[in-house]
Image (cartoon, rainbow, N blue to C red; front, side):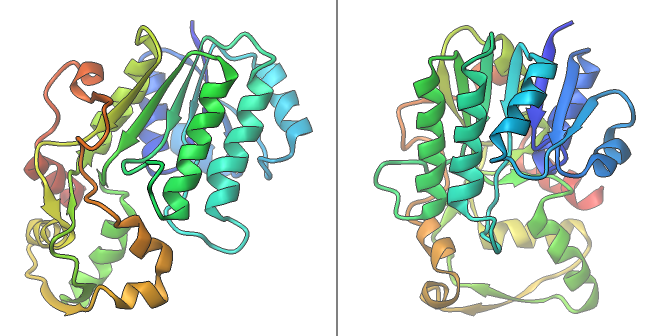
Length: 288
């Protein structure tokens, strides 16, 4: 039985990755901050190790020594900074601590969660720290696969969780006017399958994960509301307002969140089938 260590396993994408790994009979080990949450999600099947501070290198190393994993899937990430949880700390320092520790163990492969839009020219700390983490991984010399998804669709997507109660009360949505900024949404079930399939991928690689349609944020919200049986009324405010109140989010929109800007591999090579269509993604997310 292949031994697999997963970080970030209780997050939105992580829970699908863990469940699929268990379905495929991997020996799954999780490093988490909240063991009770992990047990509630997955029961007694995965082995759970608590680590409150990922930069506690001594404790991290002891856990890795106990597990001695063959494969590692690193999923920890944030979309917005909050208090001490900065992009620099969560994306870069956590990854650096993990990968430096793993260099001393016989790990066969690391699969790393990055993000679409990662580039040397990217102006946002979000993308800069994601790129720095990629470089830390490559520097280890351990075989790797890096995955860069676009907007990930699923019932637990934070945007949808926030939208549901609002749409039920009063379907008037105040949104930034970013109508010309496009995403290429990908289903979380496809993303999870790519992570698990990457374990057996031969060679080092970077993949972009995108679905079949390019849509705006307004399209996504409208389609989600429609599948809930609601009509959303949009009240736009100037995109430049984001510059003042959400500067990093504004910088993150430096180019469309779609595949094709970088000379890397596309998702179908890993997925080995057609991706779930956008319309089906949104319907499933709204109705579950």
